[in-house]
Image (cartoon, rainbow, N blue to C red; front, side, top):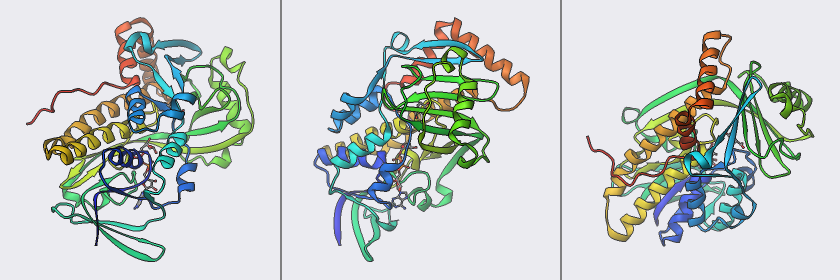
Length: 394
Ligand code: APR
Ligand code: PHB
């Protein structure tokens, strides 16, 4: 039977980054992915990195193209019914961010991990993870494989097999579904503004983002039941323009879409994130709504804690960081879950309830007038720092 130190399920950003960090520390890992490399690289996701995520990617040795092509952002703009307010992220939080598409990160990581990823691994199953001898089985080209390992990392996303393999009595799930979706469009037109603009409008939320100086990424809030076919390009551009402040909409460049998709919004957290020798990381353990783009950053935060803990275990034989992984990761997860929920609640149209809208307006007013309020947003949006303190033991 083959033997490996760490078996990783899922080659999204969480699994790939973990495999890369462990590989550089001399730890042998096996990375199993159910889809093809091409399929995984085609998925379009968010593109906004906290600086701690940027640093982790650099530590993993995959930061070269990112630093060359990524766009540094020092601020972000909020618009409410035509009124505009800029939050000075650098001035208020002392941190900036990097705009660099997750698709590009996936490519950079795939390249670094070439030869170490098993693509099209079918029927992946995890076994005996609550014992000292976990195993992973899978099929590739019709041949069954069994691999013995010290640890399993479940980086297989929300629909993966790892969380689903935990007996239901051992896991607690927290969830909130939002009553709308985001329609996203990617187009090779220059971004309407050099910073991101989040818009609260009576027609619904909109977001102006970008991938580069020549490629824009825009979103509009849409009903959950809508299909992409309901949204021909002209309708998307028209709706976006209607929701933007007039002076911004007037300079919007439009063009044919190169990608268009609808995503539902969900908050989800599973606790704990460790079951014996199985560790969950990234979307396998939690989902946040995209408002604020915390998904990838949270995956990076989990991976940082997990890779540090595994490296310490193999180097010094210390198990404490592995034992503390779940608590430490969840403390950060809930902070990001809170912020993503709050930002979603502030910016979207939930119903025609005038009371709810008045509260949103009051909150916007407060952000424009109070430096303390704006600073709280800036701190959370740019990513809370890692605390060095050990978690509290009840
Ligand atoms: N066997 C093997 N691989 C699997 C299985 C399985 N049974 N189930 C899922 N996978 C793979 C998926 O095909 C996918 O490539 O696991 C990977 C999980 O990747 P992501 O869904 O991207 O999750 P994660 O790596 O945690 O990414 C976190 O990136 O994609 C965004 O929204 C996500 O922003 C979040 C961040
Ligand atoms: C994106 O660029 O896709 C993006 C940016 C910021 C968000 C969400 C998505 O809050």
